[in-house]
Image (cartoon, rainbow, N blue to C red; front, side):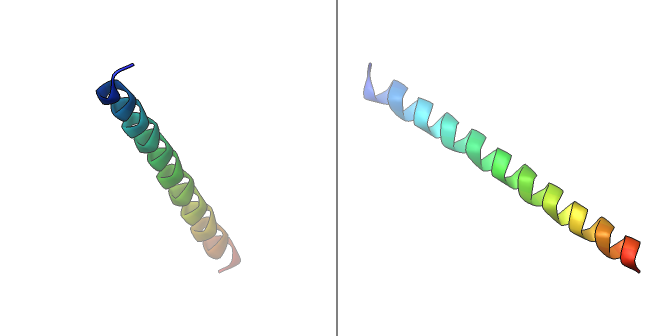
Length: 40
């Protein structure tokens, strides 16, 4: 395996993980907001 291929794979993996993390944060914030609205 060439270093470029490995680097590209790692970059793609990190990007995917970052996107999943961002989506989780957005979902958590949305749920928190909905809960606040429900209480109010």
